[in-house]
Image (cartoon, rainbow, N blue to C red; front, side):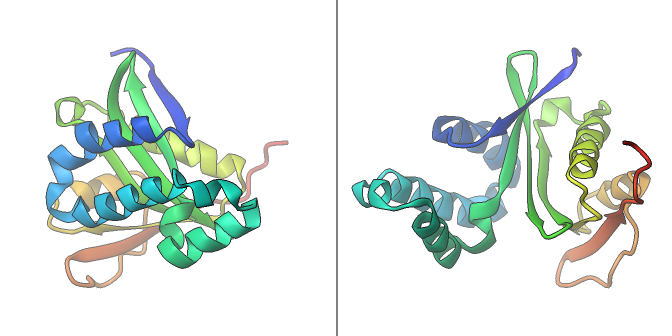
Length: 176
C-alpha cells in the first residue's frame, strides 16, 4: 500500500456522488438514505438559475436555514494511488470539530488505514487550533469503541439510543 492521498472536496458534485456510490452506500445504506436525499436536493438547488443570482451571504443564509450544519461539512476523498478508498467528513463550530464520518472501503479495512486517516485529521485540527473533537458512534459496531479509545478519545457518555458520544481534547502546542 502506497502513501494515502487526501483531496479536499469543495464543489465537485461528481466526486461526491462517486463517494456516495462506492464508499458510503455499500456500507451504510440503511441509515444514509436521509443524507442522500438532502444531498441530491442540495445539488439540484445549487444548479438552479436562482442560485447563481444570489450573493455569498444570501447563499449561506439559505443553506443554513434549509440544511443546517450539513451545508458546512468539510469533506476529504481518500485515495490509495488513483483508487478511491475512503471518505472523511467533519464540521467546525468555534474551536470544536465534530467528526461526522470516517468510512473506508471494506477491502481496505483492518490494515491500519483508520489510524492513518485519524492522525491526518488530528494534524489538520491542530493546525487550525481546534481545542476539541467530538463524535458519536453506534456502540453496536464491533471494535469501534476500542478504536476510538486507542486514538485518545475519552469521556464516554451514557448511550443515547444506539449512540455514544466521546471527545478528544488537544493541549496547547509548543510549536511556533
